[in-house]
Amino acid sequence: MKLLALRCPTCAQPFKPQNPEVVVLCCVWCGTAVSITDTGLNTMTIEFAAPAEAKFDAWVPLWVFNGRVTITSRQTQGRNKQAEQDAEQLWGYPRRLYVPAWDLPTEAVCQLGGDLVQRQPAFQPAVPPSQVTLVEAVITPEDALKLLEFVVFNVEAGRKDWLKELHFTIAAGAPQLWAIPAQRTGGEWRLQPLLPT
Ligand SMILES: [Zn+2]
Image (cartoon, helix red, strand yellow):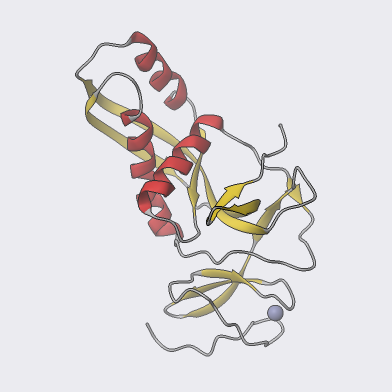
């Protein structure tokens, strides 16, 4: 990676990223969301999800795709009608697909992404806060798309019918980056209970 002068394109204040892998951050001075690539810094749009409770520690970044997962083959060891039906029900429609973008082990990305896919929360956009504390994003949209495959696999492997083999395709457009209110507990970020939709 080229050494870039990391300055906010809007207010020219210097950025001091905590994580060397940072790909998206928010300027603490003016709130501008900026994506960092090998070729430079660009402003971008982030949606802020309306908090369910007034008190939270920070915003965490989450990629949200609108997409369609098509299971072409699902082989299992066990027979479980419910598991089959649940799989058909989940992937039978276009869905929102989620990939946490902050620094997390892949396993945790799969868990949280899978949990969100099954719950399908629709976030309510809020007015961007004047003081932004956004946890830095380290996952690019391209990496998020690759991680989605693990998310889908993780969901199917979690069903009670001993998944043996799974083939599927994912059709998804460009994702939107959402900032979600979160609490820091036990060294981990927990998404705030979200407003019912
Ligand atoms: Zn700025």
